Image (cartoon, rainbow, N blue to C red; front, side, top):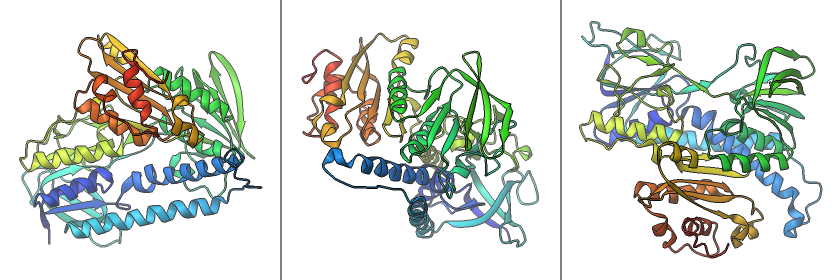
Length: 473
């Protein structure tokens, strides 16, 4: 018999399960349809497993420098099997936690593939969902008053460079490697590519990054990009920018050979494997969108500010709508969508207030506009920078490269953007995010007394530097 719900969510990733929990809190009878595992890409193929590997790589790199700290550790080595075992244990623990949250919220979970049906005997409107169950049993029919599509994304591939699990990988396959390669070519120097470059280099892999744009992490402030480039090269990562890869030149067998046009000159690159890291594609196929009036633009589902599609009772959130494809963004979008369904008039999301993080070694983080973006928007800017080299805790920590940069509006004194590269900046960026939410000025941040000795002192000093008042520079 068909089950009726106030809300059915297609996809149990971060956006989907957070939306389900919020709906449960608001008293909505809710179900989630997930074809793989609750937690989605973030928990099983992205954020969590990659950060677990990054942490192991960081510990290994630090252990090899132990003598700097007076720790005489000889013959430090890596057991990659144990690294993967630790990663899987963390993922498993968090997966159990998500399953518990579903039970706690009395949220029904259907393990299968959901497809939206058009008007039918079940409903005069599109939105009834047929669920093809994973266990092979007869399809289930669920009849929701509202639907949230949260189907996420998958790694983008390049024609001629499709993953084969042996020589050509995406991040999905790379996370399951049983052995570390001796060398790897990473196609793409964006956030994911640089995280993998950092991790594999720290593990001792010979890494080459090929980036089409004129600089790595091109969505970040130029000064952050330059510093990341410098520090990656110091780790031994080879980087080619303004480089167009030529898939037709790919040769496999005992490794890979591929050519790229680098600043107009064709060059050949050799390695054991290639990791394709050129962005992600929204999962919009095979879910029945053709049975609705929902519009797909540039491969993503079109929505309004409350995440409604052209079918007002069907919403979409997360990677499948494009924009900032980040887990914390998907979660907030899910909350806004659910609260709109419940008639709560939620605040719309200002994406310029969203913090972005890169978990490489060094880390990078930002919120708001880069210096160039602020100027392009017509702001007259003033900038303050402060190096971690003058921060006692950074010296104690053994990582003093990097800086904090604050971009402010010269006329209103509002902070427009904050950009950081250095130790633990992904944990520090939330202070800057709060400053942006509250329209804080550099003066207000500077007059927040930052405890000593902490890495966060760099934020206070950078805020003082905006007006030329930094104490320790």
